Length: 305
Ligand SMILES: [Fe+2]
Image (tube, rainbow, N blue to C red):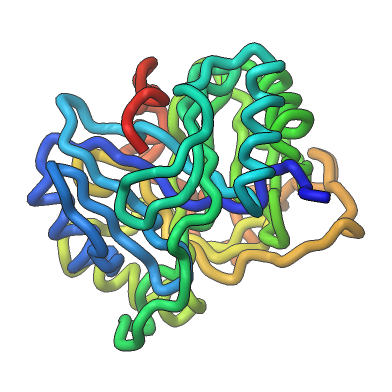
């Protein structure tokens, strides 16, 4: 029987006002690889098997347009579509075969806080041809979403999409859809906005070199290097082109169903610390500001996949 739940975080759709600048940055500095371009839509891959992990679209305003999730096959997509309809959430239409580069079968919808998602299966994922940089991102790691109604969003992600809670702090719920400790994070906030988008690097050395490369190109680390508590992943945060809050991360903890959920009392740092290593004083005011800037556009789930 098909397990009707989300099993993957696939990609993000990002709107940019300056497509040429964004293309240059995400390929030459962030080190993704451009795999397709048509009609002002550019798709970039990591070194992992997912066809593309970032879609750039020329838009009147910058921001995150949609988050794309994955399921095991078309039957799982159909079942998730039914459940999302039953939950009363707006959908783009019935699941369909996609004409886009990488193909697949899927649909889009809006979550209870108006954020846009899609679910896609049976895309042309596979091994990439060799030659990619050993410093390049493997995949999208996680998307952190500020939530004004964390309880409702969490219940939807858990009961309708099949996410599981890995850990909870006073600020965030970390939820998973596979062995990665978290693929989505839901914050306890005043407004539903983007907190940040994180890409996974192959190892700690690639993370450290990534911090240097970003600095060389005028994007200094705004927080980190450090190592988070929940997920135990190493991190560095940046403010990317058009102020998009970005994270490079590595060494995300792998968990299974036996992982004990940690609650806020488990996740406290000694006084004066904000990470495991204790090297970093905490995020810059600049990155904190950008972690509240971007709302999801109300019609974003209707965009062509
Ligand atoms: Fe993160």
